[in-house]
Image (cartoon, rainbow, N blue to C red; front, side):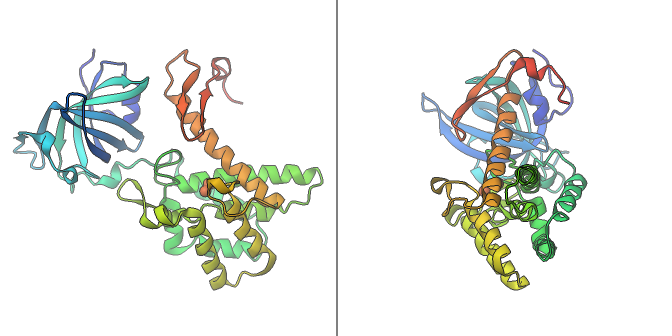
Length: 347
Ligand SMILES: [Fe+2]
Ligand SMILES: [Fe+2]
């Protein structure tokens, strides 16, 4: 067992050995009060920093401190009975110990420290895409340049101003995949890049695929997520996202913008069709099935990026020598980390 040294990040905590202690500063993404088998209350906490999230428990014997005035720290009696709001979305200091539960990294928080929120602004702790924004912007420009006019000018309109800002910071989800700042942009670019390659290959074999419109449709496919998710300060689903869903929201937003811009005809119908059909099946939220090569390609490219992300996340938590992941609920499978392949550098 080691004693805590400096402040650790979530990524550091995930790589600690079982039994190691740590301290750090994080934002509380989720908090709920639970009871153990003996009816003793405890808190379930999901904490986040720029590098990721980790779940942990606060048992009744944890120590609580009020460090909002750091010169005069106060011990809090019965801290486990604090109101949920005192912690939800707040930046807190913690001490804890790495344990594991059902084979997943988990922590027990042994000390909790309320902090001055002006000194520790929550947006500094919210997880973000590992890819720098400038690189994402450059890739967006490359993809936009592949699209035909007037669609290219329409895309400039869609991704500009306040809406463009939202599109750039929005998460792509709250859990499951790309659930962090710039996550929607990162996912959108991966889908559009996958779609471009598939469209070019199909075209090369003689299929009548419009590469530019495939890329444009991929860039627009999840546009409804700018209304379905918010950063509050961590990723959260909005009321509209819960009850209207990002596909209808996206189609409505696209239709309003197309009207405003004056985009008409075939291209408008095809882009609307790509947005509506991109989940590939009616039971996954698409009211129509992909019915053109461009729509088929975007739906496949979207599914591929989602599943590859899930694979990466699932195998990242595996210990050395372990090849089979925990059961992954949203993709209904266990993932395989082939040791022999992972020892080689990807070329
Ligand atoms: Fe989607
Ligand atoms: Fe998507």
